[in-house]
Amino acid sequence: MIDISSTLRTSNYPKTIPYKKMTEHYLGDDYELSLVFCGEKLMRRINKETRNKDYATNILSFPLSETAGEMFICLPVCRKQHKDFDRSFSNFVAFLFIHGLVHLNGYDHGDTMDFEEEKLRKYFSI
Image (cartoon, rainbow, N blue to C red; front, side):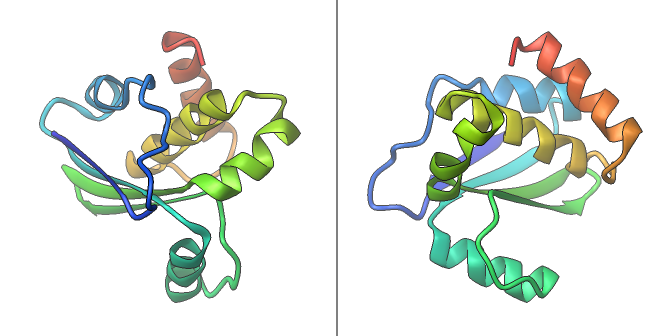
């Protein structure tokens, strides 16, 4: 099950990304993911509280258990950054979503994580 919510006044998140299919494929059918699209104010606060970093980042993910987690994607930051990664806005959000899924599966930044992300990006043509 995936629960998608938005703290923004509009629900202007990329709706064509197969969030549920990607989650089920990578984390399993029973994984419960709360996906929140948020603004910079909330993302900055969460980043400060959880990582002691005083800025809004593009994505944060938090495992809650082996079968549940939550992910926050900051759409305003994504809008600012997607061109720096030579990706469309929607493709960049999908790219970050995959990054968050791999973190939720227990991986930390490094070559192994990069390999996992690349497999998912190829599978979903991201």
